[in-house]
Length: 436
Image: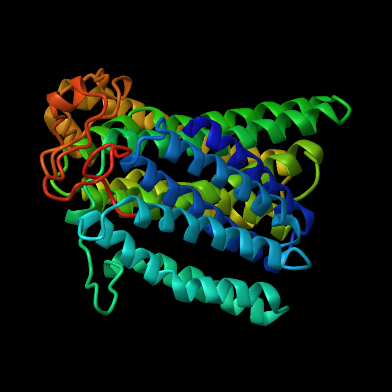
């Protein structure tokens, strides 16, 4: 069901990518970024909910279908979100955020800890909801200001524990999540974004006349996507999943590493997809401010997001990514005097070098524990070969802090988890999170 839900966001990412290319200006780029932040918020908040509630249960499935429909409306409005489509985008977004949270509040007992969390979240969203709708009705700078304030409040909420007068605040310790499921969902969104890059590359190449330059650009664009995939998935994603699943405070990792720091990676991939379209269509053109910003800036944004992700999970700074970003910055003046294809080759080589470094460092870490520490990451999974098949098993209730699966819940498909005394309904997975 969750994969089906994601199909709407494939369309949303496509809309964002095309919108970015419609006008290669700083203003349009900032508008597209703001819309991406909202789209990501809608998706990741739903992931928090499905980490707790079983999407195979009929009420949750109906919720997801409804969210899909409203998300489709929101995605349709993306191209004109700062024009005539503003009210449609704002109303759809508010319906997604408020409707999903209201569903959870109604489904849970008010006295339960999770129920109180969602009451705080619903109350916290009251002001952003007003700002979104008001911004949609206004035009020009007023819309920008109100929507930026709305998103700032929403993203500040998890940091403050959604503090609400009369309801108090929650802590990340209250947001126990099933790490394997949450990590897998975010990995799938990365694949979704990379898929847009592949789609753009193939579509653009199919619409132009083949030549040595265009074929070369096509191959370079493809290899660039492969390099980004390799950097994310080669070993870090699986190692992070192990650390996430066994963490004492998984809610903290879910908030920072996945909710916050995946966003710059997604933004970077979308920017690279737009750069690939420009490179394949015009491989011989010299760089412009827009093409250089998309090619170098998009890749640098991905590297920065991945470095922050590793820092949030492992608590260390990834120096190889810092060096790669520095190398990209050094390419900026070069980008204005060489062709788009040449710049694309240089950026792809940097990404490939980082991917190769990660692969070599992984081999070293397997041979020597010191090698793992030297490369800044320590695997907390008990399986050094990353062969754990936890994700292949049905999601079950997990204890509040140990991350261990309750075998009784594995045997009982109707089990509701470890929330003794809270009396949650049987559509839950276990003692899961707030929407963060």
